[in-house]
Length: 439
Image 1: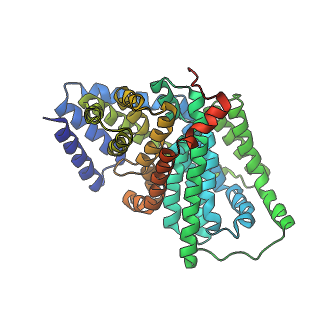
Image 2: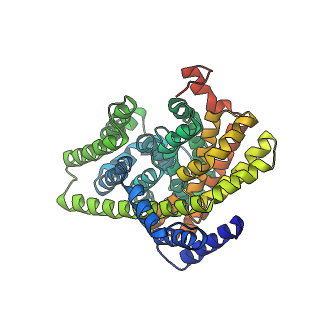
Image 3: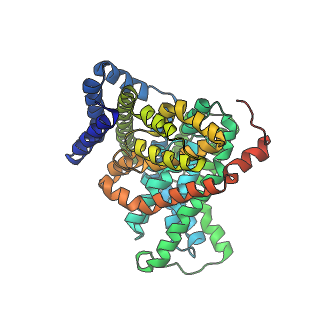
């Protein structure tokens, strides 16, 4: 049976299982099992065990439940409300007002966590209840969180960037530096859409507060200082190299508990509730990761990603036609694979094609990361869609529809860095020199 037919069968099976209400992680594992049992000669039982163990037995992954617990602490104490109250006077006259906190929060937290899932889950836990309580559009909030959560893999440090740099034999530091300006462009696009939507739908945005003086804004922003200092400390120790992302997550939990206790909003009840909720959310995400890891093994054994890459190479396209086709290929792969797997399984074939076409490998790394971000919000295996679905009870297709405008912002950002590659390459060249540095 040819590769295309195998891929179509597995995709249809996945859609049927998801439509039937089967758990997401179970769906991924079942599709992976069917693919290996019927279309390969490998042993699915052995691979299932190794995939589930390897996907979760990771020191880096320990940061995920810690960051989620940090979000639970902020959510269940008065800290999140104080953060929003502190931002409120500064965003009062900006179209969209507090809705921009989803973008700012994901941008700031993404620079600390390096994980799309952790960023999406943590900021959603804090922001959604506050925005809903204040009367903001839940649909707009869900769409912005689903896509802005992906900033966790574009703003350094990012595990996805590290994987790409190793696969491409590129400088990890250069790839990290290359991600800063595109992430700012993307955040501006997200906030720009929120402002435009709010201007077009004024009835769905809470009315502005009465204007206040600059000193009053400063006074009310005093509520931001404790959390701002905590975030600054976490970012500083990470950038300075004094702590890993996992250690920073532990500092975040300890700091959040200390601030909540100092503000007399930490009780035994909300401590236990937050811990149990963080445990449930973390187990859900890790279960999905395990299922996705097993499906990734199936894709590797069947050879579908490599076959797609070799098919593109056989077309002998011009440079920008090659980029256009690769966009389609990675979007198709993103419906069934996680971002790291997409990079690992295609790099051997795609990277020589990119070098031959004359593209900078550091630039292509950011290009691929943006495509991975799109994959995170693309059904049926959009990981951020699953995270928000399990946190809110909303159907993943409903969240995907809410994310469409922000999805378009991601596409626009890809167009910007393709038309103006200096957006990616300027900062690494300015800091490290124009000549590539061997890692």
